[in-house]
Image 1 (cartoon, rainbow, N blue to C red):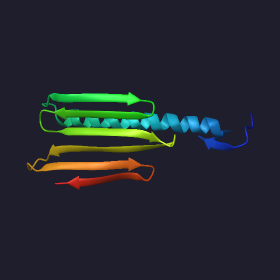
Image 2: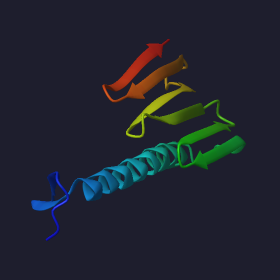
Image 3: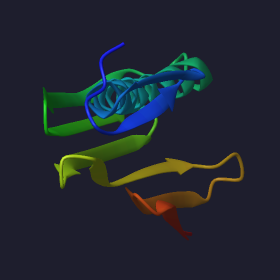
Image 4: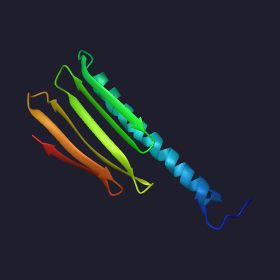
Length: 121
């Protein structure tokens, strides 16, 4: 094993800090795509009869942005930038009409301190 000064543990194995940083970066990138995919799949599953009215996506190594709107008045947009090479700063919103006919909008931010939603009725 090579010792490069500092070490950390990944899956109960001691590895170099450089390997840890790469693993964290890979996990954050995977997490971003999983979240976006889960949101899109949830909307598609819940709204089988809706048509896509608007769809936009842009994915870069240090930023991303997507927006979509469906014919049943569901709309979502999200954008994020990689801040200080470790943490993502994300902001977005989504809106829909609930089963009782009320318009619901959620505006949120997410950062290294967590997810911060604000529900607007």
